[in-house]
Image 1 (spheres, rainbow, N blue to C red):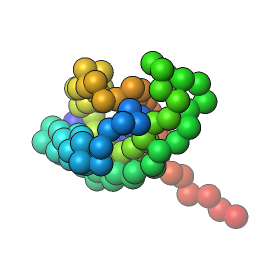
Image 2 (image 1 turned 90 degrees about the horizontal axis):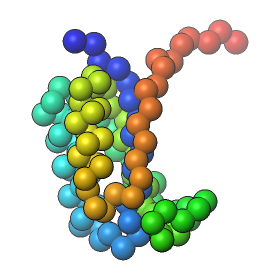
Image 3 (image 1 turned 45 degrees about the horizontal axis):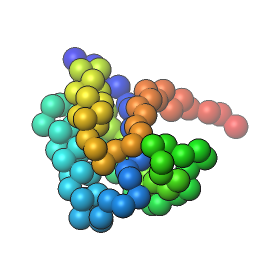
Length: 103
């Protein structure tokens, strides 16, 4: 089975505590690894002002995850995020592999 490179960014409600944030990060990281994902890299982007309000929130806590996975894992991950009340928005994009550039 071929693994593609994906990037998922999700936005947490601004009233989420740091402990809950770390629990969610570890939960999604273990979900990816248990289902065949590899090279999981997580970056906390911090609290940022939203361009427009989402469900009456003007700020959000951004978390970015880069990993290698297959399409079935992406469906499972996004379904889990869809039903999590602490997440107000998420987006997963497939990234192209870096090509060698001669300058």
